Image 1 (cartoon, rainbow, N blue to C red):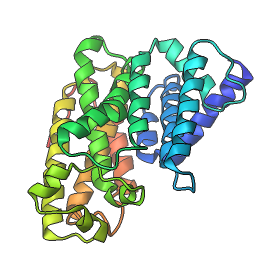
Image 2 (cartoon, helix red, strand yellow; image 1 turned 120 degrees about the vertical axis):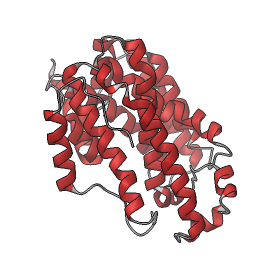
Image 3 (spheres, one colour; image 1 turned 135 degrees about the vertical axis):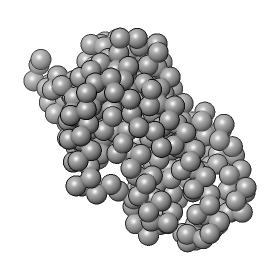
Image 4 (cartoon, helix red, strand yellow; image 1 turned 45 degrees about the vertical axis):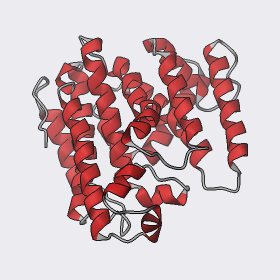
Length: 295
């Protein structure tokens, strides 16, 4: 491995460690040789997120130009163009090549990131699912060849569902942060069903109506976790502890939201550190092939 490629992997690992604490802890349960490749994918997605989500002075049109330039550089790198001093591209290009990852997953991811620059809300859950196809489901299928499975086709839909479950968990937890970026990811038809308006969300009060809405969304997220559970025993034995831990820890965020009475504005719902470590240890000790508990 060249010095430049090694530096790129180290940079992606630093991004992963700094910004994806729960995910990073889970990936420490993977074999050492797989971890850099997971971090490379995280680095790619994080770098792209920063273009569209950074709370700076740039206007959406400026961010759109930056995203197009980044997308063009990424495509050119995959076609063999030099990566220059880019800190992320060498690692992600190498990972894509090692595992033969489907470029279509990256294209649909970048399409969803572009939507974040022009779409501030989603009318229905089907509309939101179209966005999450790129922002979440595609990441699940990107990861699958790295994790490994005897039957990749059988494991594909559970991987998609787990990506959707993680993304919806983030949307529930981060309502306030998303408002800061001018976005509402909870479907507007769901808001209307429970008598919640966008203005109510911006008031950042955990009203009875908002609590009912979030309870509904938590149940919806759990349905995605349930659909994903059967895929974990299908993974390569050395990958199951990682994904089992991520499944339980992200699902634990929903439990913390419930414990807080669905007040997602008072504080950010996080799984306590002691609990995170206990889940990681228990996952590591669980025999591969065992089913995952479903709530």
